[in-house]
Length: 217
Image (cartoon, rainbow, N blue to C red):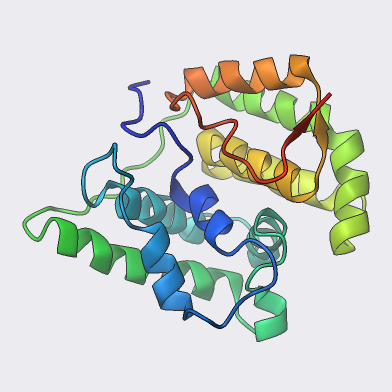
């Protein structure tokens, strides 16, 4: 897979970072999405917006139950802009995110054509991500129940569904955010495994470390 042109997290997983924690009304939802859609200094204009747009569209168009979408968003963003609290449907939220990012991408490249291509994931990449999720399950299931009140295994199953039915790349990026949000300790061996997976997906060198509250032991 071709390397990303940014060294950091990207796509919908990056967007969760901008909503991390209790939602602040200092900026509107649209302003916050637009902030996340701004390009890093090391990537072309419009690329950050396009990456979020692609993730949002693929997830929204998938066959996943809407509650799975709501679960992964809520936990990855540490309850930031809690969809249930605001009465927002998970798929409606993704459509709104896609609309804002589509506008940002067109501003950056008015002549560009926005095409959301289907993911052609290899079986090896799917198996590798599912294995990483399974390995994190014992600690993650307990933490997700403690922090967010989810039934044991509910968040793990949601991440697996994203990896298998939508995109293993997105599933892995959301796993990293969820581990950070739930403050799950990461061993050096796990960290090395995550960096190897990141290399397989073409991530930048700071991608794995660009996670809130990631702790190692």
